[in-house]
Image 1 (cartoon, rainbow, N blue to C red):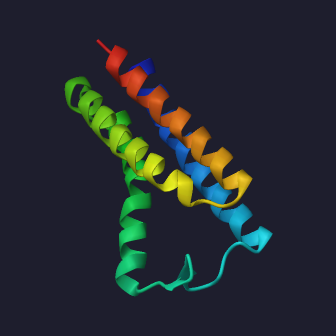
Image 2: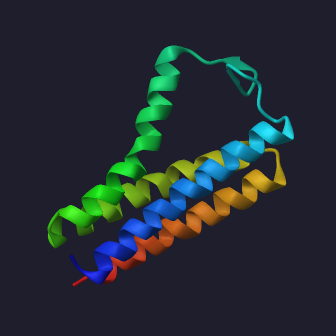
Length: 121
């Protein structure tokens, strides 16, 4: 296992913790309505989709430590670019300053992941 693999795993952990912090703050601030997102009722399929999306960084932690370098290098770049795009699209939809701040922090982690994987030779 290389130092780069450990760095990539740590970046995915940091991203997950940033997302988790946003969720916790949303609950404690009162910005969260149980069973709703943006005033819309959440279905079981939507919850499944959110679970699949949020388990990806967890899987990336494991894969970054176990797969060989050419495969995981490109997997990190592709997945981080997808999360970067997803968060950029969602950024304007967050009304709270703490949410926008945490999304920007997440974007920084995505950029660092892309940069770290890109520079991996």
